[in-house]
Amino acid sequence: MDLKNAQLQVDDWIKNHGVRYFNELTNMAQLTEEVGEVARIIARRYGEQSEKESDKNKDLGEELADVVFVVLCLANQTGVDLQAAFDKKMDLKTKRDHDRHHNNEKLK
Image: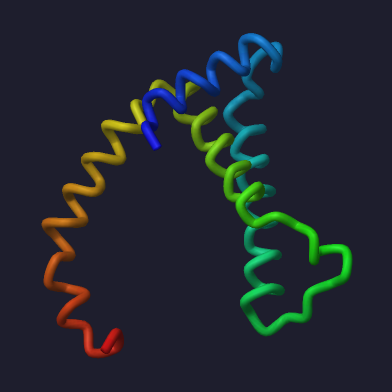
């Protein structure tokens, strides 16, 4: 996924369909809600909780996409270039963690 284009696509959608961005606090609450929906699916489908009949048709991909959408909204409205931030983070993690996980006895 090209994050820069994804940010532009979300901004275009907001301008053409969404009236305006919700404020940052509202979007943070929405992000928390969407992450909760992902957690519910994961806990019930892959964890030890039993899955309710009403949850069996929930689409994990759709819920993850909701999380990405709100993250892109927050990046847009706070002036974050998410592509640059992500590239920087991947570079940092690659340098910092290259040997760390290979040497972790818990992962063997």
